[in-house]
Amino acid sequence: MIDFKKKLKSIVEEHGTSIIFDSEACERLLAEHLSKQKAAQNILLIAQKEGIPQILHRSGNKSYVALQIKMKKALDDRFNLPDNYGFITQSARFAVNTWAYALDIPIPGNKNRSEPD
Image 1 (cartoon, one colour):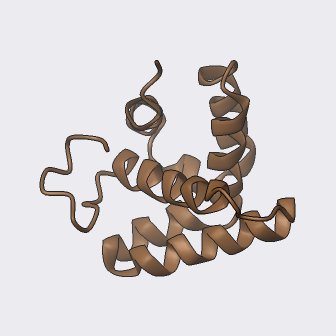
Image 2: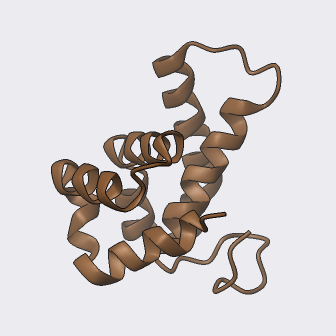
């Protein structure tokens, strides 16, 4: 199983944080490194386009809960799916946690930021 957090972190380490501000580069790199994981690729790209990694980069984990809510709303708006099984909520949490880990931002409630969920 692919560890998306470590994969995204290696992309950020190799290409720098500038990719969080460049949708085209981010999309290309995610497609290149996560070519067989379309769902994860799309969720991380939606987060990038919604400004999630940019906000994390600027404010650290101060806006963590607000970012999860923002990402959930973006996914709700984009896919218009009922959240009966928590898919949207889990996807929003995945996106925020993965970008936070890639940017080396501590996740609230997570004692050791170097270990992914």
